[in-house]
Image (cartoon, rainbow, N blue to C red; front, side):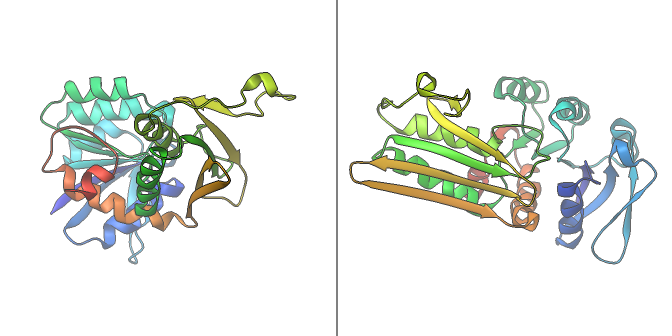
Length: 260
């Protein structure tokens, strides 16, 4: 049995994680932490409730979880990881906004644990990124349009940043493209990430969506993934919880667990 603490348990993703892990075989939730919901409870999806506490360090001391799953906020995640890793707790992180250098430093400070971070836990999104990396070898002209709900705390998304990095690593040249010098309105050409243009859309009604558009002579190729419900991320979260207990060090990207 894998004992799991869910950090950010009262948030939109956290609530889905609580339900999914409650239903998963061989996993049990031993604590739910959310500073804004101290003393409340989260529905576990199975007719019960999981009490919420506001203090992560106290919860870890009390229940001694094997794994922490963190879906919180970019402003909180680094401190959460320092607390959990120092206590020897493996971490599964879906919160974006923390740099790779910081992740590596955190991981090296706790070499007996696994720090797993995924920009996206949806299997389809991982495949989309993989296909984009392959396409970039042959069609180096590419731009990314990512679309998320209007409460997302960071732009561009972690998925878009990861996709741009994979495209940059795969293509042999950086083709010339119209830049900010062509903009009639500042920002119209989007952000430049690893020499790939990224455009962020934030609207109510969206969940998580991304298009990667490749252009070539007389043709285009569009790869698109849509998460229309947050349940799409849960198989990946469950896979990560099961895998981190047998690993150490920093692991970035669900594809590294899917290929195991």
